[in-house]
Length: 353
Ligand code: NAD
Ligand code: IPM
Ligand code: MN
Image (cartoon, rainbow, N blue to C red; front, side):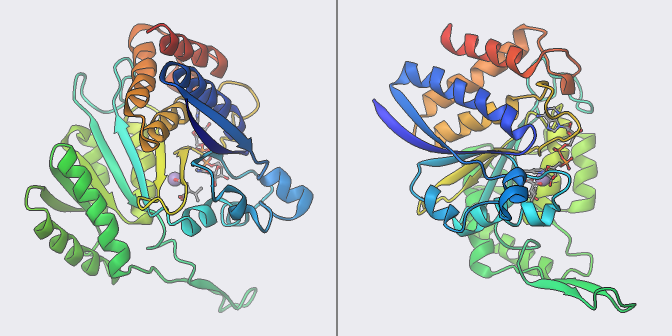
């Protein structure tokens, strides 16, 4: 038996509803593959913030530093400002654990109609999002609060090593896929960082002569994704562009409740973190109707990362077959299935193989 220690951070809202399904699926597939998962659950959340004044303990990162992976639900809740909750938990994990790749696959699955793609169109691409620098730098601040000259300043920081490593990851991903890459840019606007980004993309293109690449302006790119999402294979973008692209792409594939994300530290100096693309969904939280697919797909990505590609593929095939062969859908996909009902079907598909 191979054992894995997983740190669970359910967080807020539907984060606490979608992680148990992911763990149940991991346990079920694990049984078939000689994998045993032990979970340490951490109550780091807005509730904790309101009770104790901090999203996580001061030694929080140290407590999860030696786990094999982190599985996170969602962070953020009305009543605690997002910059307090996210800057106090999610962002420090990504940054301190050098999870500089945020990998977000998008697929139109059989049985889940895309609101935009033509029927039968093969929509299957991955957003490779830079995850620790760029527009999300810590340099900036608010000045002159309450005065007429009040202002806020943000410095976007793009370093050569920071951009090169995400581009290398994206080009390598393209090599393993269809060999096509699109870089999201905005060098036509007055954004000083973007001509630099473009230059490094050109250099990376020379390092990967077998990858066919082009750049598209982010504004035009989002429109093209909506009009014909089947044109894409790998899209690489900065932190903010990648963030926006991934919710757009998830919706194009049917619902943001489906989309998974892997926050990877490719060097494996620290644990990587797996979390659905969606947030805590305060509008539906507590009703047991959240779509658990994003979280379950995260479990599949985590299995892959931990070196179990067959188990990962079985999880993917299990939920894909439930969608292809049953009418069970959660409300975000127009159905009436609850989180539990949908999860049961996926568990059934995992064990009935
Ligand atoms: P959201 O993703 O929480 O919700 C957007 C819409 O999508 C809502 O209508 C919601 O009901 C729906 N939705 C999302 N996930 C769903 C699912 N699994 N099943 C069914 N419907 C689903 O985005 P938001 O409203 O912008 O953010 C709410 C909070 O979550 C904020 O505090 C935000 O900062 C936080 N957030 C956290 C993360 C994270 O922790 N990774 C990601 C995004 C947003
Ligand atoms: C995401 C989320 C986060 C981000 C927020 C909640 C900080 O939107 O994971 O996509 O912007 O990265
Ligand atoms: Mn986002």
